[in-house]
Structure formats: C-alpha cells, structure tokens
Image (cartoon, rainbow, N blue to C red; front, top):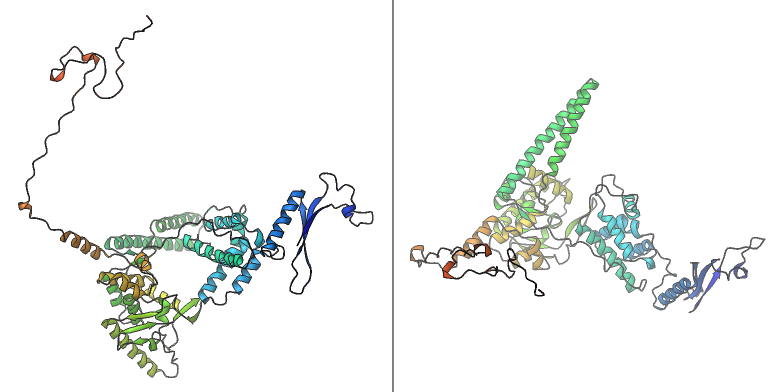
Length: 545
C-alpha cells in the first residue's frame, strides 16, 4: 500500500472545468491546498478502495495525515479511512451485546440515548480523544446546577435537548457518572480489541470517587430532630394552602395584591424550611421501631412479605418473584433462584443478581408466618375459583396475579407514614436485617451468606450499621476484660512538687544591684537565655581609631 500528496486549487477554464494540475499558479506559495490519496485494502467483493482527503495548508500536514492513515491501515485500526462515527459504532456495539441481562441492556440504552450519543455521537471514532471525553463529563456535572451556561456549552445543550421529560433535570451523582463512564469504557475497549482504534481515550479520565452511603440508625435524637422538622413543615404547608385559598376567594384587586404577597412569603418560608434538613440517604430502624412497624401491619394481607424482608434480608424482586416450590417450611429454608425485575413499568421474570442465588435459612417465627400466609392464600383461592390465577407465587394480588414491584414499594411507604415512623426505603429493610443479625450475635460471614454477597467486604462496607445498644455493650465488654484493683487498695502516689518560678534576668540597666545567688552581674549586656546580645546602652568603638 502506498500513497502520494499533491496540490490542487479551485481555478477553472473558461468552459467551467477545473484546471487541476495545469494551473500555472500552483507553484506559487499561498495558492491552493494540499491533498493526499492512498489505496486501501479491497472490500469483501474485491473492489478497489481509494482514500482521498484535502484542505491541508502545507505539504507537511498532508504527508503527516497520509502517514497516519497508512499506519492505521497496517495496524488494521482503520474503518473506511476513519469515517465511522462514535454514534454509529456505539449502536453497533450495543446491538452485538446479545447476552446482556434486561436490566443491564436497559441501563446501556439509557446511557447512550441521554448522554453518550448527544455529546459524542457526531465525532469520528478515530478522532475521539481524552479532551472530548473530559468535555462531556464537565457538561454532565453541570446538569441540574443553577446558573449553568447552556448556550456556551454545546455538549450540555445537546444532552439537555435529548431529554424527553419536561421536569427539571436533577444533578448527576458521582456513582451515576462512573456507571456511564463504565459503559463508554467497555465500548471503547471492544473497539481496541477489534482494532478499530489504536487506544481507548476513556481509560485515563479522572472522575470523582463514588463512595457507598453508610446506613444511619434512627436513634432517639435523630428521630426527635426529624419529627420537629416534619411538624414544622406541615404547619408551613398548611399556611401555604390557607393563603392560596384566600387569594382565590378575594373579590377585589387591592386585596388580591396583598394576599398574593402573603402567598409568596408562605411559599418562600416553606421552601427555606424544606432545604434546612435532609433525611439520611440510607437509614435503618432500631429493633423497637421495626417491631412497632410489624405490629402496625400485622393484619395486612402482605404482612408476611415485609416480615420476610425485615428478618431475612430478601431483595424486593426476590420476594415478589418467590415461588412456593422454592419454599421448604419443613426444613426451614428458602431457595433464591429467580426474581421479578422492573423495566420502566413493564416487568419480567429473570435470574437473580450475579452470585445472588443461594439458600436462606428461616427462623421459627418466620416459618409460622409463612405457613399462616399459605393457609390464607389457599382459602382465598377456594373462595374465588373463577377469578383466581394460579401463578404459584408466594405473594400475589387478591386474584393470584403477580405483584408489581413498584406497587409493593408504594404500599410500604404508605404503611410507614400510617405507623408514624421515621422514613426508610423498602430496600433499607434489607439493611436492617443485616444490622439485627449482627446485634443478635451472628458472625459477619453468616450475615454475608444470608444476604448472598459475593464478598464479605460488601457486607461490612454497606449493609451493616452498629446499633447504639450493641456499641455500648461492646464498650462495656472491652473495659470489663482489664483487671483493676479496688480504689482503696491502690498505692498512694506522692503529690507533684510545686513548680519553680522562672528566674528573672537582669539587663545592663540593673548592673549596679546585687545579682541572684551571689553571682556577679554581667556587664557585657548578654542575656542569660538566647543567642543575640543586647545592644542598648553599649558603646561602639572603632578599632581604626
């Protein structure tokens, strides 16, 4: 394979045809631009391929571009002379990921549609570099930030234009940025393996570390703080409602102006109060709060579902998709082999998360709860045989059809509000199960097996919180193992001697008085401490005289 460079201009003959190489001014500097052409490997049909590019200001630039093309051809990292765009490649890459889980494929699709394609899709794959990737992430960090200059940031404008929702965008967390970055990095790694590009420009991009949030226990102090904030918010919200009602009923314009000011003031007070406190992102109840919640829903038909999650730590999809065939009440165990996942609003039966299949042991109380739930379910099916759907699931709707995961979460939120308990998510019941197990004396390895984690580090870093009672008991136990004598048997130590006051130093002004300890006063003006001599009052003599 070879290539050549040449110079061309836009000059034409009288009939309109281009002069080409016959232009007499081509040899003059500043006239025309430089081009290169190179022959590429033949395509699948054996057709000859010729690459030609122009617009270079100097011969050296054209030769450098030709050398780069021939180098990519020799390394088999060219794609039709670099014409494939990042967007076309990403679509091709995602279409080839046939073995992805539905949830992973949906996440990849969302990352491409909302961020990667709008910001990078128009660029050539071979031209993509670290600067382009950094510019995209810089724009993503501005999403949802007040005062972001959209017009002067083309990447941010493209990302916001790709959104279909009319709601104001929320800022992206560091963890979400890293997930999007993982998608781009995986796609470009595949491009390197296929020799479509020489290197991955997303490998050395620095992003903020997304730390896992630690679960916070709703202690009495935190609960009191939350209740005070919630009660004040209710009062302020009621004031807004009253002010808006008065504004709607005001007949005169003068009164409406005054009432409108009151509405704005009430809304501003509510907004300021709402920003003054944020509940913990991940939180768990104390044993007393967990018991109060379970007591408040003891008569609900889904009590067994929340009891199982609270004590054995099942995920929402695992509990909703649990079939009776995987429940062994005689031996007290549950086999986790499937789950119901949510894709938008649609749902589907799928395998559990990676390395999450396993057996969960049941305690005696949970066994009795599940046995009672099965009897009630069988009675309901017998009472309504015409409408009952035999899905074989443990937890179903009234007609036997599967529960929607989002419906379970909303039901849980309503139950928490009705029980007047501090707010937690449904998934936080799983955190609470790990915390209760540790407080009950279970080993961390056993708790990790119960939660079916691939590593005990995940359990220690994320799913365990220390209850105040457990921490206090550990502190008392640490002190108790150190043997100490009774206070009356301890040896009496002598009192420390009184500190000796520092000695005063006399300067040259005090040379006439008696010196301490019978010493002669110093006449050279030098301090007893320090390295610099005093110069005040000293006579200066010149040796030259």
